[in-house]
Every structure is written in C-alpha cells, then in structure tokens.
Length: 118
Length: 118
DNA sequence: TATGTACATTACCTATCAGTTATTAAACTA
DNA sequence: TAGTTTAATAACTGATAGGTAATGTACATA
Image (cartoon, rainbow over all chains, first blue to last red; front, side, top):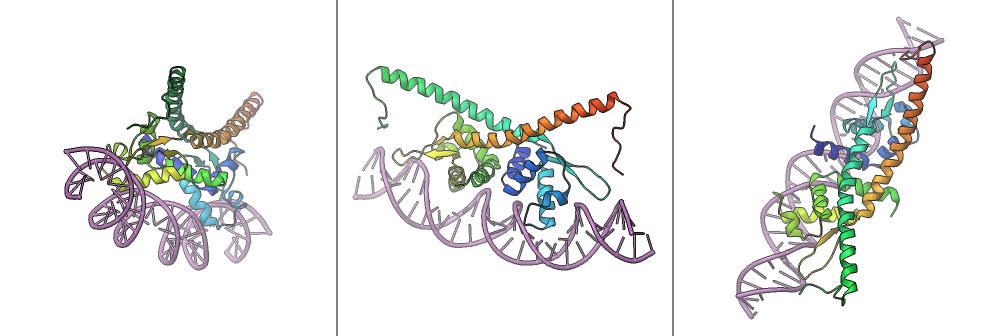
C-alpha cells in the first residue's frame, strides 16, 4: 500500500472518539472484543466495525484464543502519522523563526511593519 | 470546543490527501486559493471546501488582501494531534519494554513461553 | 450431545463527504 | 464604467461512514 493511502486510513481511523478510546485502552494491554465493548453504549457489531477500521489502518492486530479474538496495539502506524505531522510542523516553525528574525531586523531600522501590500 | 471534538476535526481533516498536500504547501508559507488550487485537477469550489474543513479544524487561518484570501498554517492543532498520539504510544512502549523484560526473565528459567491458555 | 459464549457477517437506514456546475459578490484595472 | 479576477455560496449527486437488529459460526462445557 502507498504511504499516502496508509495515512488516509490512519488519520480517518483516529478521527473517531470511540476508536481513539479503544486505542487508549489497548495501550495498557491486550483486550477481547467483549472487554473493549463494555465501556460503550453501543452494540457489539458496532465495536467490531470499529475494530475492522483500526485493523485496516494497521493500528491494531488480532490474536486467536479459542473463541476469543484479543486485539493489541501496533504502534508503527501511529509513528508514521506523527512523522508526517512533525515534518511539516518543523518546516513551518523554521519559517516562522526566519520571519521573526526578519521582523526584528525591520524593527531595528525605521519601522514599516504591518503595512499592507498596495 | 471540547478537546475530543477538536481531535475529531483535526484527524478527519488530515485524512484527506488533498488537504495534507495543502498543509504541506502552507508549511512553506502563505498562499492564495488560486495558488493552492493550481496543482490539483479539481475545481476551485472543491478546494474552497477543503480549506473550510481545514479552517474548522483550526489547522489554517485566513487573511484578507483585496479580493485575495491568503491562508496560512496554524501549527497549534497539529501539535495537539501529535500529543494525543504520543501519549498512548509511549504508554504502549513502556508496557512493551516490561513485557520484554518479563519474557527475558522467563527464558532464563525453564521455558514456558508461547504456551496457550487452556 | 445440547447449550451458552464470543464474535463475525449481513441487510438495512440515515447522515455526511467529496465532488460537480452555476451563480454571486467584491475588488481591481483598462 | 465595463470587464476581469478572486473566491464564496448554493443546489445537486453518488459514495461512504456509523449505527441498528437479526442471524450465523466456532468453540467450550455441563
């Protein structure tokens, strides 16, 4: 799968509060579907759907234990998401610092700041 | 707005490749709608809609310059998104390290690893 | 072997999303 | 002032998301 496609799935998966809560729970350790469903006022199939979304995004994986299907967190895709954001945030911060320096320099000389382009 | 609601909007906004490309462009500096639309095979209203999604999420903001409406990046919400992810990734990594240590310890004694619960 | 448990799958509904074309508004320019 | 540029808005469409209830399936156990 393409990196861009993976990011689509990852960010879409993270956009739902139920799914974020499931990930938060799984950060503390494996859990079965019943355990994961317990805190929510939602049907079991609804939780299974959310789990499928998380699985397609590669954020969690499944084990098999008799009729139980414990899920666990897969942090790799979380890291990819962070990496994407950080890259652009850093470029921006650099520009911002350059802009700041420029504004400081202009202020040192007779001020022309805040003047609109005419 | 609630923190959870903000994360919903932020991650949903990041889930679209066009919107991520717009953010990437804005990381290098301000740009008008026409400039932002140029790389895409998409109508101007479509881009305006994407910008509205990014704006609602607080990821960008708008200036006014005559009939132009230059947008710029607002990195605060990007940071919030990173913070959310990192929190749970870290908890997980800690557990993972504990698990590793436990497995090492078990391996030092007569091995019972990989035995399924019966 | 019959029953209960854990979970997946299916069919369905409604709301939202991502795009379109057409139109409108505001500001610059010849 | 007439025409052009920049961008927003409205109305429409098809696809997808998130939920439901009903059903099916695999396994454990009495």
